[in-house]
Image (tube, rainbow, N blue to C red; front, side, top):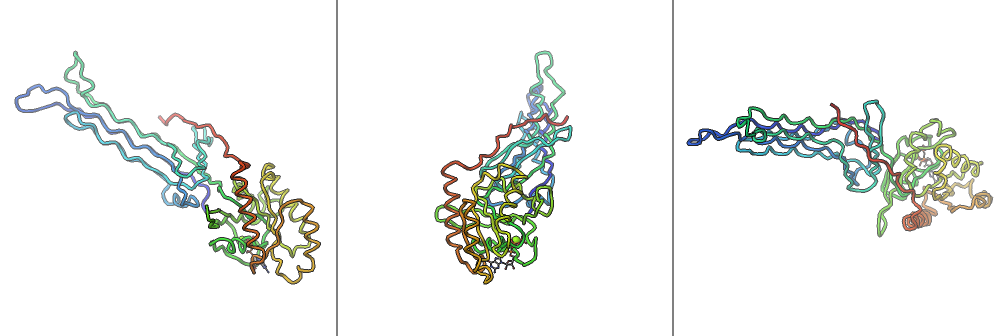
Length: 351
Ligand SMILES: Nc1nc2c(ncn2[C@@H]2O[C@H](COP(=O)(O)OP(=O)(O)OP(=O)(O)O)[C@@H](O)[C@H]2O)c(=O)[nH]1
Ligand SMILES: [Mg+2]
């Protein structure tokens, strides 16, 4: 998954104005008739809900809109250059690099079809028709088209999902994701099988729900140990955190507490999100005798608690129903963390 990328955007140059004079039979001094050049095309960034990451932009790092056409004879305006739209997934944050090398936030694209102007095309030059005055009826000059704006843009994706599956390595996140969605991540009994976030969709009757598996957290993920830290930012905009615990672990309550601490250290407000605990692998024979004790000790946490087996399907229907219900409640109740309000920044174009 490509979730960070740097690109260069350039508006099209303005077309040049034309210097020309009307020359026709029987009209000996026809006067100036050079038209204006067309404006250069603009570059926009547009959200496309069918995209999951920024990989579409990997091959081509420079995006240049079409230049305006030159002005024509007979005071004809040159054609405007075509605009260029760069598609990005929902959840993309746009930063623009200033001359001092700082990345300033420009927009946070959280709505489908949202469009932001990132580089304006240059204005077309004036044709010599515009320079005619009483004193100068034969203007031998015309305007050159302006250069389009050029910027270096940094794009960073922060997934916008309904729920994120988080947990320690091997807890069964990928198995659960493949049990509840059509996603088919790699499943294996060694740690860190999943090295990138994986998305899946639960098809609901009224709407679909996007589920992400976040690569496993380890102790110290927030200080960049293991893979977790790199991907914790994808948790920021989810509605529901699913803590997936391995029932075979002898320290299941501590597992939860440590996971929670890991998130809190990264960003304290993450702990305020709605949470559900799913205890996985309850099909394992050695777990069955411990289930009652486990239930009792986890009940103290006072949180929605479900016992499941992602492998044989036990408790999965209840889990999905409960999770969707919680996500639905949040969408209606407005508990959802609203996207940060960013100031729209319009730097001066490069000279
Ligand atoms: N018995 C049993 N095994 C399970 C269950 N869920 C997952 N497993 C097994 O646990 C191992 C790890 O499963 P994954 O789904 O890859 O776990 P993960 O959390 O995605 O692992 P990482 O991506 O490495 O963090 C695999 O061998 C699975 O077959 C379950 O409900 N019961
Ligand atoms: Mg996995």
